[in-house]
Amino acid sequence: MKNHLVAHILNRVADYMELAGDEFRTKAYRRAARTVEFLNEDIEEVAARGRLQELPGIGRNIAGKIEEILSTGSLQLLERLSEEYPVDLDSLLSVEGVGPRTVKLLYEELGIKTLADLEEQARRHRIRRLRGMGEKREAMILRNIELARSRISRRPLAYVVPLASRIKAGLLELEGVQRVEVAGSIRRGRETVGDIDILVTATDPEAVMDHFTSMDEVEEVVVRGPRKSTVRLREGLDCDLRVFDDEVFGSALLYFTGSWEFNVELRRRAISSSMKLSEYGLFRGDERVAGRTEAGVLEALGLSYIEPELRENRGEVEAAARDELPELVTPLDIRGDLHMHSLFSDGIDSMEQMAEYASVLGREYIAITDHARYIDDPDAYFRAAERIEEIDVLAGVEVSILHDGNLEVPDGALKNFDLVIASIHDPGNLTERLLAAMDHDPVSIIGHPTGRVLGSPEPVVDIERVIEGAAEAGVALEVNSNPLRIDLRDTHVKMAVDMGCKIAINSDAHSRGALENISWGVITARRGWAEAGDVLNTMGLRGFMKWLRR
DNA sequence: GCCGTTTTCGGCCCGACTGTTTTCAGTCG
Image (cartoon, rainbow, N blue to C red):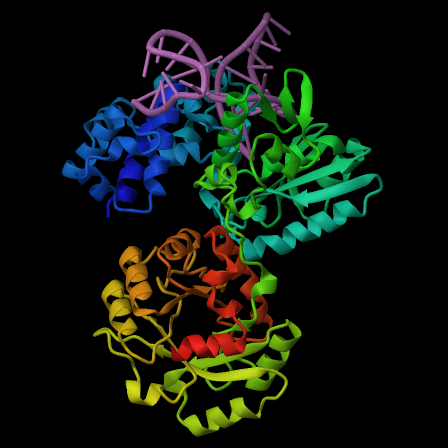
């Protein structure tokens, strides 16, 4: 599967086009790159069928480029461009305030190719002499080089949400503040977050800005205007705040929730019906036809309401136009939690404590699934599960998949457990091992299927084959809700849903508190277009037991 | 470079803020 390579090369071409100032070719290549990146099939197969030009944003020219990449592994155009501008684009562009036009200027005037070159020339005060530059920009570049070097780019959603909520709560306490909403990728539920976007309506914007720029959490004020400010937080990420009037809050929220590509698509739609969409509303001529609510704006564009988690321009706008959006699974649909650990293995709470808190969270039943190798006295394990009264408890097990595709415990012994989750806990040959595990009769769920951990290199798995195999074997794939796993991820959930493969949204909790993590899995499933019917643990216990025994 | 029931040519999302300008380009979201 070369989709990633193709997308990477097309994106790189776009970088150079942007540097050269060719705004529209830049857009064309970016769009094509995106199409390939999010394509739910192998680009090589599409090419083999001669169907490249049917993909959105790919015409005769780029189709040819893609074929060249597929057959040679590289692209002559890109080699030419990178010889023309032999600069370390990634590093230079990562400096806040330095864009492609500045990179071009820096290279042509001062021969700057790397971050180190940039730093040296800035220290020698050569930057300030360039056209359009000055002392302030030079100083800013110097400051932001440091930042670019130390910058952790994106953080797990679960780490950022509490911080955003704290800021929101502080704003809500201010007098004259009417509404506060966290927008951006947090509201869309993306697995990682780059910055925090907050929208406010208030009678006194100035007072809001005063508070915002002087909060305890603020390290530095980056930008401060009357209606828009940006601060750098002590935690190392930026937070944007915008103030709007109440009557345009819907269009503003829509706009600042994004994604960028989603917004472009909406504006395109507005234009095609002779309207104009901005954060200040949907206009026909000078008349504002909508803006107070998101639903109102979408309706005026001929679209049904699109949940924030879906707003990625991956087909949801077209589906909304046809009124064919899925009815997404919600946290309230979750009735059981099928993957958690207790003191019997590496959990830190007892079965009773886990059960008790699960019950507090409203679960109707749970499966305790301690690691097989820890359970040396199965009878004691079963008895402990049976003793619990306040909630139905299944005595399950999580069993590791070995390198030869066998399980660490013989099938015969697994048959005694109510539920068997098979998972991989060490690298190597993942696809074949997963497919082999599904053939073992007692296995009902594959746990954290790709084994990825956010921030570490992505393991190599042929996810399409895995999902296909699971659908065929009648085995469910887990959406592991551990905020550092989120595995399956959103696009994989979509693939599973499309292929009729059941998913199970589980906490994989190793402590009581971690049972709450299931909400991150629900968000991920929603981003994957999952309805309640696609999710195993939205069934009641009797329905679930029936599914197990089928 | 792509795309089309308003176009096969002429469009391509739009606004806030900053710094360096003396009317605007660049960057960001």
